[in-house]
Amino acid sequence: MNESPIQPDGEVSRPTAQQLPVNAARVLEARGLRRVYTMGSERLEILRQVDLDLDEGEILAVVGTSGSGKSTLLHLLGTLDRPDEGQVHFRGRDLFVMNDQDLARFRNRNLGFVFQFHHLLPEFTALENVSLPGRIQGLGPREVETRARELLGEVGLAARAEHKPGELSGGEQQRVALARALFNRPAVVLADEPTGNLDPATARGLHDLMYTLARRHRQAWIVVTHNEQLAQLADSIGRLEEGTLRVHRPSV
Ligand SMILES: Nc1ncnc2c1ncn2[C@@H]1O[C@H](COP(=O)(O)OP(=O)(O)O)[C@@H](O)[C@H]1O
Ligand SMILES: [Mg+2]
Figure 1 (tube, rainbow, N blue to C red):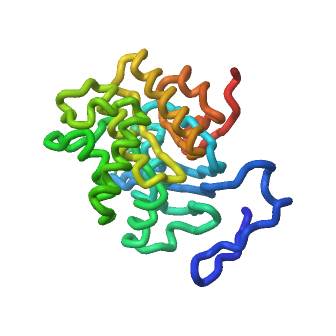
Figure 2: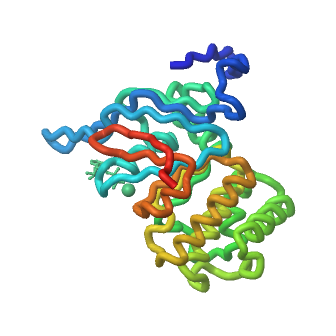
């Protein structure tokens, strides 16, 4: 593994150009991830030995049967859960040496999350929902609104800013959730079956939008999906099977 010396202030000394692949910088690196759930006397080894490399701007689709551990893996990569063994490095920085409070701050600044269920607040308008990350950060109201409107424009919902989630279609609700996830300009976006509840045409539209935004902002995305066709549109595909991840390039 590439051991970058970490300075006391948390800064990582940059590796020399020869150590990096051309035109690519590693943003996320996981090594030997293991996650075991204990149910009474039973031990379920869901992730056995997962290694993963993600470059800036790369889109990785993760596929695997239901129960293979896709959500478990995404939770570890998103630092929402800690592994039993193994490490996750973000731009060379070992994440799980941080305490929970520092991890929460790290997440807010660097990661975006999109889930199968949009988790929008029903009493809030689209604009207010997208604004939440900025308000939590304590940014000024005008700055927050400008950014939220810009994001709603990017997901094609500028005209629906004042609508509440109940007045939007499933696809539109997910677009709002997408805009909210991007508020803080995350370097990595983690999406867990974001189109799982949508009809095929709407799912395709949302995937196209996610991939367009990822390219435009040079964000790295990890998208868990059941849809093999949509997975083929990613830069790489990781198949989770028997607790390990095998990554390959799409065949088309
Ligand atoms: N907190 C937990 N405690 C015990 N078992 C769990 C827990 N979370 C998930 N599991 C089990 O781990 C397996 C993988 O779950 P999950 O990561 O959600 O799979 P996937 O997202 O691929 O469908 C499943 O068998 C699930 O029941
Ligand atoms: Mg899942």
